[in-house]
Image (cartoon, rainbow, N blue to C red; front, top):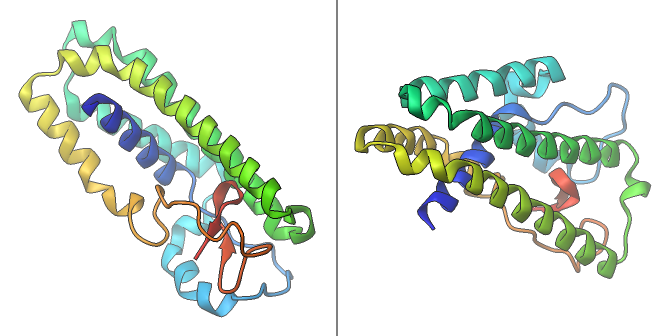
Length: 198
């Protein structure tokens, strides 16, 4: 179970770092609730201006940073490629979701669904997330089993440092809310993957 939690945390952190939200296109009319979101948008700062190449570079840096922090032995090095591949696959899924979300922000009519469609879409996203997390856990388990106490401590410290990205109102592990409240509900905006966010 611990390996699954570590793998899930790692996937969410990599996705959070690699795929920050980009700003709305210039000339786009303000969306309802834009004043509420302004503080959040301003807080994203430079991350909101990253292009795909920048996000890919940050993902590479995070993966390389984790690997360097672990100081893998030659035997452990052989177990690293499946972990890296699973991390990249998870990041790709996240990037696709972010792109869909951006497109829905540009064309809000394309995102309108009835409550049952939203429930089914949310269930599909959860299934995809569960599959990606299981792949990552399966890939990471052999490596994690070989880590010594110091490597595990460093890995856990690295992962715990990013927990703020996965908790709270706009965290990466934010639960789906307000699915039965209309298109996006009062005071809500669409989050990555089309989920409703408060």
